[in-house]
Length: 224
Image (cartoon, rainbow, N blue to C red; front, side, top):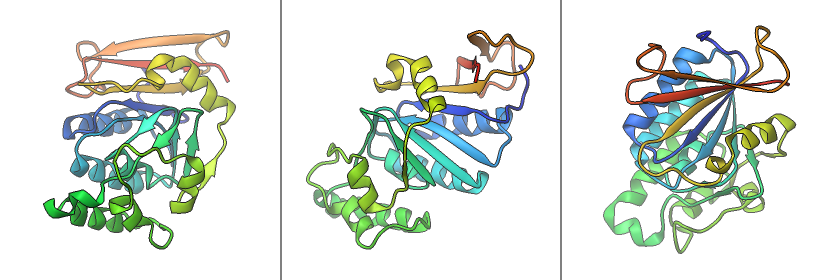
């Protein structure tokens, strides 16, 4: 495997945890060298502290961040989506608030307000309060129209986005439980045939670029 891929999409599906974001960071460090990042993100929840650190990492690492939402992006996923310069919704794509008013007594909302403020995102007036305590449930579905009211620059799916989602199949819609799945979707390189999709399977046993904690990673190459 060539260690660095210039134009690629990173797919993340699963709970956000310190282990999964460590693996995600290592995948980027070992495989991506670019000023821009496209991330296909599917998550139903996880650790808010881990999500905050991943959001800061993405903002520090890339000049421009695109996040594609083929399905749900709930709870901590909102912290990551918040740093996107471009947010792209597929048909089933949705965000969720980070908390509700009922969580205020635990101190969770104060923490999340600080996190959202520290991310230095140009939220619209009142948007942070709305995300932290303005919804009745964390399962509320924020669609692309409502997302525009908060902060996000919403863009349309490109043909490359659609191809990536097609290659991922059902996992692009169904949230993974347990260990997160991370894949690199890379444009066809010049050394491969250009007549279809090529899947390169690598593991810790045969490639030290695979982060610890990930048993298996797929590099999916496809023609433009």
